[in-house]
Length: 289
Image 1 (cartoon, rainbow, N blue to C red):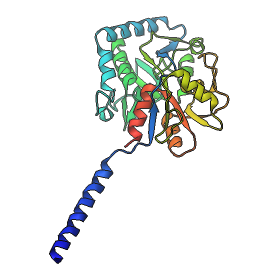
Image 2 (cartoon, one colour; image 1 turned 60 degrees about the vertical axis):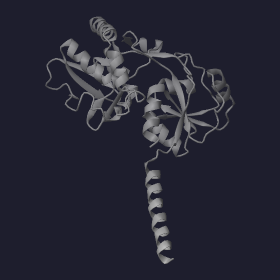
Image 3 (cartoon, rainbow, N blue to C red; image 1 turned 90 degrees about the vertical axis):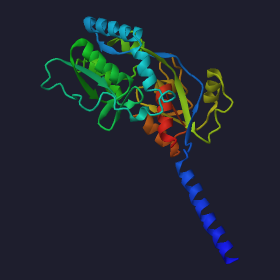
Image 4 (cartoon, rainbow, N blue to C red; image 1 turned 180 degrees about the horizontal axis):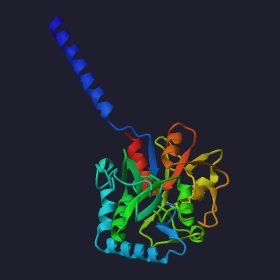
């Protein structure tokens, strides 16, 4: 009888350990995406006004990588739904100059590496759709790539003032920005989306942009977050240039990156985050582990 009891005790301990181990390896849903597209915008690369020759070459290059399938290949490479291991990509590697000092023929690219999957860093490696296009563009132009990682708000200014040759940072083309820099032809269409905590039911049942905006207008005492200077920030805060009325009833908080905003969301400091669709999916994939 004692032997049977001991056997059951051992079995219970083993099963408990197995289930505990399995539980540790299951993903934990902390945040979720409200699967409704709120806007329609297009990304473009920017050069200084007056740099007509460079702009023409960039547009010719974009047309080439679009027609030969290179662009679609890059999109698939960094799409988590098509490449489960995309987070381990080394991108263009770490052997990339971050200063033009000593470089005779540089292509100086302004970016902000807090915008996965378009630009980010895996260790010391520059990765992302824009970063790989930057390397291909530099090769196409016969130049040496120099990447300058900076605050998103500084990207357009650095190009406008001549500190960098081109801005490649998931930039939404807008009339206001086009007053100070010249944009390439669009290379990607996107939309803004909302991230909330996994247990948040605020937007449950909303299936259209109109329903989301009606809900946003009705909110009281809520706080939103977005990366400073991005379309998501202006969507809530309002912008005549982007054509957004904004939501004056919502307290808007600006962050250095959308990932930092999501951290505050998880910690309960804000109620939702507005960010571009693909970066939203990348952040959620990393957070829900």
